[in-house]
Every structure is written in C-alpha cells, then in structure tokens.
Length: 212
Image (cartoon, rainbow, N blue to C red; front, side):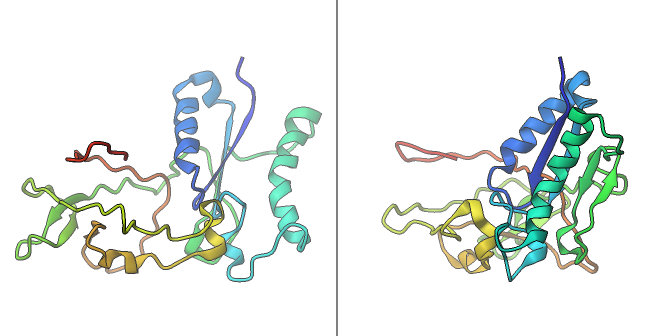
C-alpha cells in the first residue's frame, strides 16, 4: 500500500532528473499521489543552499544549517510516525533568485500562476551559424559540432554533487566550437524559471559510439 513520501528535489541537484522522474511516477498513481509531499529547495546534492552564498558553512559549523537540513524530515516523521498534529503543505518550494529563502506553499505542482514555457530551436535569418530560441516554430535546420576526444569540454565544477560550492559562470563555454548554444530574445521584465527542463530533438552521430 502507498506510504507517505517526502520528496525532496534541489534546483541545483545533479540527480534531480531522476527525482523528477520519481515524482512523475508517483503522481501517475492515484494512491501514491495522495501520499506525496513535495519539497523543492534551492540546494545542490550536498545540501549547499543558494541563499547561503558565498559563505557556505557545513552543519558542523552552523546550527542554522543543521536545522535547515533536519527540520523538514523531523517534522515529517513527527506527523506520520508519532501522530503529532501539524499541517504539512502538500508542496513547498523556494524561489532561488528572490532573496527570500521562505518556502512558498501550494496544493499541487506546478503552483497556480506558473505557466509552461516552450521555446523552439532555430537559426538567425542572416547568420545560419547563430542559434536562436523563439516562441514560434521556424524552418527545419541542422546544428553540427565536432567532438575532439583530445580536447574535451571541461566540467564546470570539480564536484558536480556540490555545484553551489563553486557556482561557476558557465557562459565562457559558449565560445567553444564544440558547444552549441541558442540565444533567446531580450526580456523586458524579470523571468523566474522553476521546475524541470526537457529538450525534444533528433540527435545523431557518425561516430562508432554515441552517448547522450
């Protein structure tokens, strides 16, 4: 039978694709859907918080960090293992660039007021080598790059589990010839992106092996 589940997902967690897959699977099953509590935090896999940059501290160094790590799980266990009366929201989520670490609450995910954003890959009308992101579907095209095993695209961090410990600027990689990038139109107002990201594309290779 379904049991209560506290599903924690970090915005910078390198394992979040599998966490979102688990969430979708739980939501697909009515019994489990009613038992899931979603906690979306501005953290990486090692629980570094975006709101604590640049002076990250470990739980051993900071009681506040230890409290942040333990409180959601302790509260959850108190309710479902010890029958302590408490109202745990179905969905709690942080908006990373808001400057406010407080959790927003909702009865479901995505919350009210959030809309899907669909962008289509295309190319500049004047320069075929410049990738563009647009709301409208453009003519079909093909983007090509050459993989050089002797000059691999470097990982942006030394430890992908602790991404926020380094929190690098990844824009310089756009200058590499083996990195495809697509540029959207300038925004006239602030835009906050939340939730999982998906890419739908046809990808092929003339190599003997190919991993995506």
